[in-house]
Image (tube, rainbow, N blue to C red; front, side, top):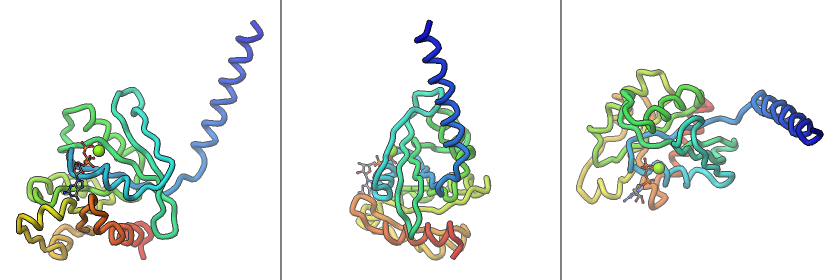
Amino acid sequence: MKSFNDVETLNNNESIIDEKVLERKEAEKIVLVGTPNVGKSVLFNRLTKSYVTVSNYPGTTVEVSRGKGIIGNKEYEIIDTPGMYSFMCITEEEKVTKRLLFKEKPDAVIHVIDAKNLERMLPLTFQLIESELPVLLVLNIMDEARRLGLKIDVRKLEEKLGIPVISTTAALNEGIDTLKERIDKYVNRV
Ligand SMILES: Nc1nc2c(ncn2[C@@H]2O[C@H](COP(=O)(O)OP(=O)(O)OP(=O)(O)O)[C@@H](O)[C@H]2O)c(=O)[nH]1
Ligand SMILES: [Mg+2]
């Protein structure tokens, strides 16, 4: 019976510790979203340097990666989400991503798209903006877009959308420093 009590005490202590962790002021948070296969996870690896944890979203089998990264002079928590096509969620992955977007209260939401399929992917950008999420748009896979001869007027797109737009080739580490600068400016309003 003694061992049973010991376990009870341990569990009580654990729950107190959890509450303390929850009360602590959290780091600035960035959530990466976008359709499958656009390079979110490659970008996540570029932005995070340490403490990457992969866990199932509570009550689901959907995996979410969290890591820490330094942007400007601040530490951020960066969250990599499973691919989503739209807010009209069909798959469990999409439902998890939508829930995460609203529950985590991110300081920045990075919508990553494949620059080759700009028009097909912009509807989700609109949905994110309409939901009043703090969105930045990343046109990734620019190497392939360039190879296909696609020309994108990034400044004009920024003007039309009213949000920061940054082009990257995450696989080659291109545009990552600029992305970090823009995130820093956006979050800290400088
Ligand atoms: N050419 C090129 N390939 C890239 C670039 N970024 C990512 N990729 C490739 O695109 C593929 C998908 O990358 P991921 O990072 O796994 O994509 P994801 O968005 O996380 O995909 P899901 O997790 O399925 O939603 C991989 O083979 C990457 O190497 C890029 O800038 N250029
Ligand atoms: Mg991924």
